[in-house]
Amino acid sequence: MFNIAEPTGIKTMGKDEELMALVEAFQFFNHSTSTLNQAYKRLESAADALAKELEDTNRQLQDRNRELDRVNRYLEDILSSIESGVIAVDLEGRITIFNRIAEDMTGYLADELIGKNYNDFFTGEMEDQAPLMQTMFSGAAIHGVEREIPLRDGGTIPIKCSSTWITSTAGERIGVVETFEDISQVRALERRMLHQKTLAALGEMAAQVAHELRNPLAGIKGFAGLLAEDLADNESSKKMTKRIIEGVDSLDRISSNLLILTQDCAGEFKRQPLEPILEQAIELIEARTEAEFKVERDFPLEPCSAKIDGEKIKQLLLNLLGNAFEVCEGRGNAVAGYKYNALTNEVCIFVRDYGPGIVEEDQEKIFNPFFTTKTQGTGLGLAIAKKITELHRGKIELTSPDDGGAEFIVTIPII
Image (cartoon, rainbow, N blue to C red; front, side, top):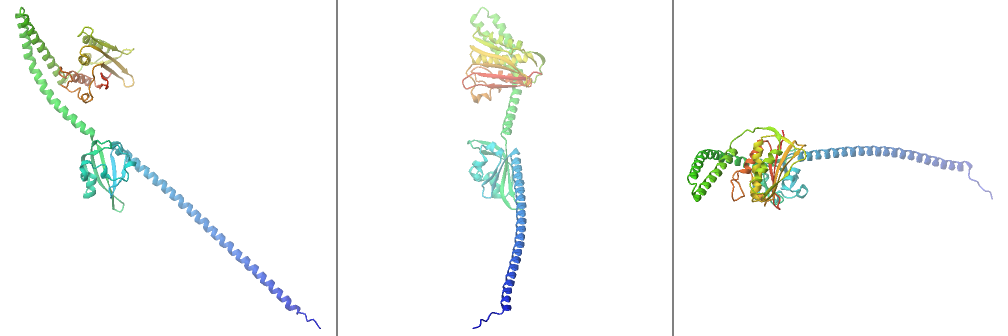
């Protein structure tokens, strides 16, 4: 048998086809790989661009957040710096803003009120008549209303307040804001002015009465002296005339004090040492008793001089020491002295007693004319001491601790 072999050309052609197919496949693979690489590079470039855009967006967002924080802090600083209380509420009446001044005035803290209902804290007895609530219900702005606002401790303070709508940039109403000011000092000043007007009217009347009394008092004293001479042999009648003269002298002193208190007077100021004036006043007071009432001296090591009216300062000291003498019932000790304050260039004259003290409710009235806590007395001594202090452009203060005693401190400039 003969073996018939495959034609050599046909077999070679098959291998070429396989090789060509392999080449084509390799070329397709290379092309695909190249395409994928290009696509990857495009994707990578897009991702980088997106990442950069995202980074830019984040940076812009951070910048905006910082700017927003700055604006918020700026607004908070403005609210804190405004010398008025500010309360804002939303349309439901919930508190959204409560500034530092409002905290100081009311005793409440913003953290404990934000989100709470305004009515639960600040309407008080006015209920819906509070300006903020009036604006909420009526739609009208309220200006300059005076009322009492409740405090955290249960008290109230007088305030002057206004309220108006809060609107958005689109003109939509989004809440109500109320501003208010503490007018306690204004009210106190009004009461003081009314009190001063009353005192001025009383002073004018008292001055006229005192002036009119002095002439008849002088006559009574003169005739009583003559009567005492005529009744020199009658001891009982002599004692009665003596009492008449003592009574006239007392009335004359009251009249003189009234004139001092009510009349304007100019001081004769000159620079002079303080210790001799204090010594004179102390000696005069101690002379009233036989060593039963002693005044301790408290003077600085280096004497100090001041531009003062010596006679009026002595009168002031006599009134303060006389007050100490009376509250101690003429027995015991007191302290009188002065100190120099180099920082303020002032001198502080003080008189301290160890009597029963002055109750708190009387301390504010102690310098008022005709006010006295003693069974006997006119209540003019401390009022005159205050007037003399003010003549020297100074101030007089009282301290009286709960365990007794009182100290009067007169502070005056040395020039």
